[in-house]
Image (cartoon, rainbow, N blue to C red):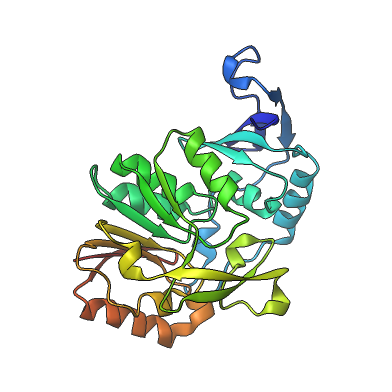
Length: 289
């Protein structure tokens, strides 16, 4: 049992944290009630400032909001529910405060979640390569009504992935490895975990690990939906033959990191494998065949 706070986040004129359920509710066993009001922020518009060749940068005002937010979060693991998402998430102070802010302003994997709701169908069998804290994987499980296979080599994220799936009664097959053509890959881990990557130089992270790899064919066995978000390594992973059973592909293409030429090559390669581009939002593309 996690001992901490159950908190619900509301996005609106101000960023608010308030008690989500009555203090005597049995679901709160082991959790403290918590309430704090954070000064006004933005809940839309950040995505409109982007181009495909650059990542968004926090403004000075947003950095101030993040600093204020850091003063109010509990110092032990706690539960939260974010407006716009149907899940409870287990939060930890070991996770980056920037991630919490992005959740608050509906700018963490929001495009991916919207696309999943649009293109995944009940009964689909999905595998996700690169799991983060499990948010998009939980959407895949919720919409498909099936267990999701999640391939994630970052050991720091495994407890949060498992806790989040368990807390929301969603089926999970967690594969603790990377996906690639080699037996193992050197993975550089970063506190801001979304930068953790086999492409990140060791001096830009705080730890490097040798992660075992499974092939794309093994990862996709028995699946018909593939989701990929691996910080630029999609170039290598999707150069492999994608198993014929995969009919829907979601891929976050990290053009700011890999460049326009590699993006074009990746898109052309997927078209040669019979995929058609059917949608795109932010850096996430949807393909069907």
